[in-house]
Amino acid sequence: MSASRPDRSPFLAIAAAAFLTCALGSSAGHASEEKKDAHGAAPPGPAELYFKVPDLVVNLNNTGRSSPSFLKISILIELVHPEDLPAIEKIMPRIVDNFQVYLRELRLADLRGTSGIDRLREELLLRVGIAARPVQVKDVLFREMLIQ
Picture 1 (cartoon, one colour):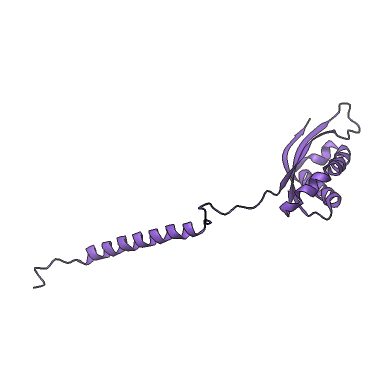
Picture 2 (spheres, rainbow, N blue to C red):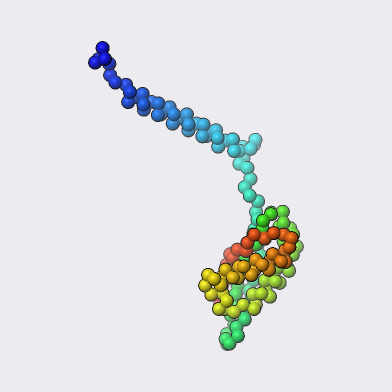
């Protein structure tokens, strides 16, 4: 009796694997739908935490050089709390003034290499943090920096 009956175990294993794949795949689709709100839209991501400082162009301190050197820099200020954006807007003239006074004292050698850029970032972060207090500033990001 067993000789006339074909072995169905490979077929059953394949069918079971296909069934499980379909069942798991459909439940994964439901899990992603649960992340949407009642209107079918995904929940909002983190609010914008960046504020663009107006582009700055300053002449660098060039003691001993005959031709002037210039720095053009574009900066973003990263805030800890998005509700602080209006406060930063109000004190932006003070921030720009602090940045310009500091940048005009830099020499070309101060901006050389990664360590020079890191020191510049630290100094600008310190200055914006003092000017913006009690607003918490997370970082200062460089969008563009051109030295001529």
